Image (cartoon, rainbow, N blue to C red; front, side):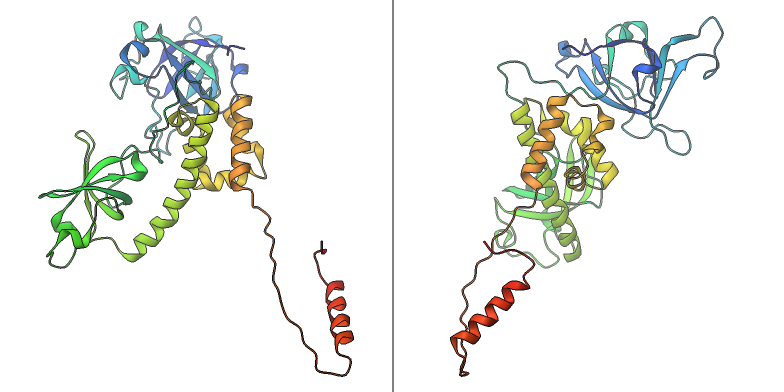
Length: 346
């Protein structure tokens, strides 16, 4: 059954007014915005957003004239910090516009005419005959932060440095300068680093406009390696679950991360910790209002991958007794041990 969509009446960076009564939306939650103009620009027509407040468009809630209010309109507010500033990456700006802010006036009528909204997170399936896109970074940020440690795969060695791909950031290319390979004098680069090998590197500089990432290997401490190993292993486990879910349910893996994945990570510290909680508490997904097929498939995948499996332990042992009772004493001892076992023998 097709989801009910509602027209957008007004839109600015931190609020959206929808032609729907407040009863359609929970007090706080998520919505999916559709932009019919995006496909012609080669972009996704849907995007997922969070709101923290919901109110009818009336004088009781907003400073407006009586003739302007409409109780059948609902205003949704974006998450803000303690100073009332919109949190990063939470702006209600459609990607098809090509810029990061709508300015003080907000969106004009031409933009609004292409926008509709559905309550909850509605992750669409790929078109019939197409395969889902399984490529995606593991974290919300497109690029790593400066001073962050990352796992890289060595791609090639050049006269300027070593070119690598950042495994956690969708194989984004980075470079380790030769001077950043080792604290010691380098006699042979190939003795320090080999093509096809995974390494841990520290981010020195990130140019988001040009996509340049400068890295260092010599500045990584043993403590950095230990901490990163735990994070990377957890992220790999999550990525495996998400890719499998995307494959079976015909959804792009990036949509799965953007809709509920990174939200769970923000709440529980890491998505894997959220998935472990999901084993015993399915209600943590309720606030997302996912479609039932996707919700059940996610639970099934998590249970399949993370439910502890019973382990059978078998051991052979030898018992001897040199007393007069001999075999009778051994038999009596073993039977006494069986009686105190907490687990039944099969």
